[in-house]
Length: 525
Image (tube, rainbow, N blue to C red):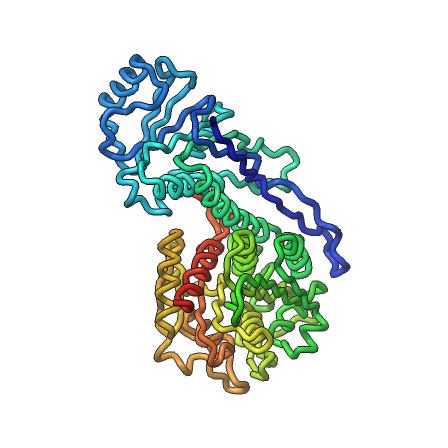
């Protein structure tokens, strides 16, 4: 008897309010991120396209139900094309003899036991692009040539994840958007029960990435602090996440003058979002993300049109935190994690903070504003302090699009990390390698005085720039184990590539999600 298990990947998105004032945000509406549909099966299914995942050195290719003529046609094509099953190779066969499929696509896996998760996800993205360029409405993916059951569902789930990630579209502002990919995929696996669990974990992770992409893609006037916070509340609460939103007056009452100052030039004032997923006991792992919803630079105004046009992406760190919390909650991960997103919008007016002003952070530290365009560390300072002082975090990881200096040092192939804790560094590097959101450590030692101020406890500028940002933030973590992740340059894809569509790509969600699980497990061992 054939077994079919349906998994919907039409996860929810929530639109932000379009209000331009700090009045209460209107009720959010729901729509699907994706139109693609998946089913899991242990038997062949009819489709427009048959995709076969082929290990290297597979020998003669034959599947159950193939006639002698079908095998002869397909294997002759394989021999002529010299298709060996090498990882990431493809062979398309049009109108295969004797099969009720318009096209047959063979995808080489190499040695399945050596195929990495990241490589399999890239194969899924490539498959998605191929299918979207065809006229196929139904796709059957056959994975049963992967003999090892563990490799079978691991690889199938990873490829499906790549399909999902590449198929996302941000089209809410188009009056007549192009049709989104809407194919129906059936995935033939060795053991449907095991595959279902693996697919569901990847689906929850994809939902987190989509949430981060949506939040980051929102223009500044639609993704302002309160709208960001309400959006996050709407998508997280149904998953059992405890969400707290502190408004501007609460931010002031708690003494978080560093956070509050950045938005004081706007009528859209600072907020602080706190989202807790308690899947385990003990002190929480705290993720603190920069949520600057738009960055004009303040009175140190950004003057390059191309640069300021993308400053809605300055909230990508905060979006990554929300996405990671959503993914962990969706996976029902046995971890205790709390996301903290200080939210601001850096604007100019008669009330805006000025270069040379002195502001006071939540821990009492006085800060000279050496540059109003170095606002990210000002809001993160209070976010880190809040996680330490009010949430009793056992470890803190902050993530931000923080410095151009990081881009100069590492480009966008790696995010920079700063920490003095080898266990944090090791687990972050492992997580980054796993999902291909790689990180590279930069030093902290020897830079103690680069944020020293003449008139206050410290200043928010210094050189070298990436180290100055990290040294500045380290103070607010005090004795709590801490790492700073500078993801400047990583959050936006100028064109579609691999698992990323054009635009905001949700960088950091998968890195943080896997790191939280790795670090938690390490602490338990």
